[in-house]
Length: 237
Image 1 (cartoon, rainbow, N blue to C red):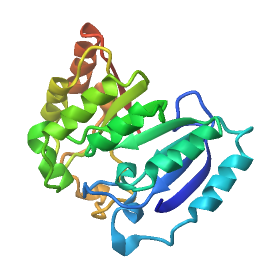
Image 2 (tube, rainbow, N blue to C red):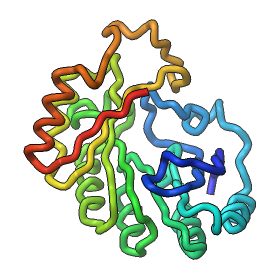
Image 3 (cartoon, rainbow, N blue to C red):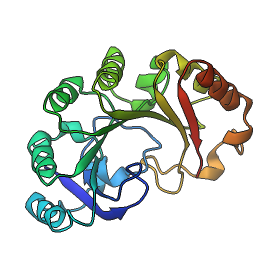
């Protein structure tokens, strides 16, 4: 695999588990607010880590860590993703996969082989704005297909949206409910502006300060979620 980074310890990225994080290099989206530009923009790529060395590290730590998070970039673009997951699973790790949902055929194979214990899928925007946010020529039905596949996978999952002030309004946040179904877990997270693909500066955001926990659209969405058995939460900086 093209591994662009390794975080050796995390208490936050896999709910309830001590995890290591493997960052894959390369993505088919170009979201301007992406906070991992060194994994997306080829001009910012750092030298790759040797996959064998990463696997050796995981083997040595399998009694201290309980989980591995594979993220990116977009992991499903990696030709060796499934073999990597198999080797990691053989070490008895729980595996969480972060994905943008653009390759449901890969997700289906992963589900068929039982290689992932937790899915986290980014929902970039309401479907009508998907191509604007991702700057990718994507059939938006692919996103709905991936969401449904994850729902039926039989493992824990979450969907999440980064609120990007420049292109998304609170009305757009509210309209995200059209993509959600009972039983979903949906997280709205605040955008990080300290390091982004387009080098966006917080002072250039014209919409002003934004408080998730006071915003009527967010509160209304949470209330709607409760009524429809959808757990919606807000993740601030």
